[in-house]
Image (tube, rainbow, N blue to C red; front, side, top):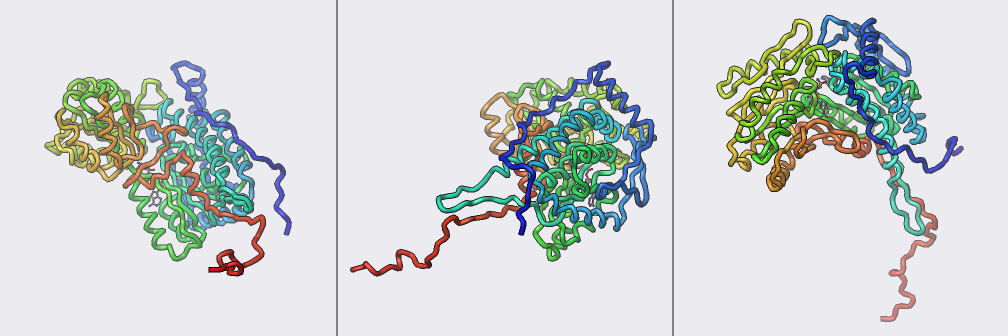
Length: 553
Ligand code: NAD
């Protein structure tokens, strides 16, 4: 049998990654003008946003409009919806591409994603930012840190993390040569991505692919515009046809077909907890049909808390609260939506918090003065409207600011803060995924007593902030709240994870905590095989203890 040949050999090393700097977009700056020009270009034509299967663009089934959330009469694209045959052909394309891709040396796969990182930071940068601003209603700053910097970071850091995984080899004592073969999974991986981060949409299909798997990718309809750019960028970077197959349509229908397939090898999901639970149940129902036990990775909902101690720097608490609750309209999975503040701190910052939030400009994200855009769609607006009116009806809740929705031009929800006397209220436990913050004020002497409440009020465990100057208060809270969050920030806001620094993921109802952006998350997409080669195989079967020839008791 011929030995597989590769064109080059060596112990390859990918570039050491560094976080891609974000641009400032000062009004009138060249970078702001460039992105505004790109926005005009994207707005000027309705884009077809086809499925991409085996490298072919396919436009089947019913189409729906992709619109700008902050200007919902503006149609940006037409999105097809996969029927069963289209989904099936995406699965078949993945399976067909699998053998060659799995045999492609890891450094060649890594080179494709490294190039994708440079394309995201360079040629495609403005288009990624513009489509994320228009399609997902992010401001200049929010779009840049997500769609330019974090997309590039994911591609570059993942290549580096993959190198570490392949470099990790077992010891070989004299006489043996031991090695670890990190095989891709047998079958295809299904990646289902949420609307809120272009970087997550880029990362979830790419991590399994980097590790040698082939993928069926179902993007969110609400981020289809930027997902289309990601797909084109990956193709230009050299990703072979069939390695990532993008299908649009009903997540339920597409996943039902994929999960029933005997070659379903894994799910890389980010989205809401209920959807992940339903997918996990379907996998359970089909467990007898699979060749291997599928890998299930899910990063899901959050109800993230900001907790302050009486020794906290009040100004730092105020800034963290307003930024992490209202940037990107509270639609970051890490956004804070409940706060536990001592009376002394609250008395210092309350008026300022309310005035600041009231001053936020809510509107068109392409205007420099806008701090808050629109929520993603009408369903999100109605969900926020419902939560706000439920809270207004409670005696335990006092509305401090906001409380209104304005759906006429865009799906605008005014940043809203309630203060509550009931720390067990629904506003302190349920995820709404919008610009709604509820504050519970405790007496300064009660810090330790409220820690169990912070831990138990909600089923989620994603991010948490602890503000204090008193070191013992920080230690007490870190210990009592050890399982309350997968990411705990001390004297910092609970948003803003960064590749190579703070990896993302939470436990309990927030997901499988596989830490997106870390080596752990790549490890899920390989299945190790240990190879032991004996350099001097034994030729006799007997052992010294059996040898009685010179034994004289
Ligand atoms: P979502 O669950 O509504 O949708 C996520 C994806 O699942 C989309 O592609 C959607 O089309 C698909 N989907 C919807 N219903 C489905 C079904 N029945 N079967 C299969 N697929 C289905 O979530 P979203 O609104 O896009 O995103 C917001 C949610 O994502 C929030 O709960 C947020 O906390 C969470 N999120 C978590 C993280 C994290 O890292 N923990 C990151 C981002 C978002």
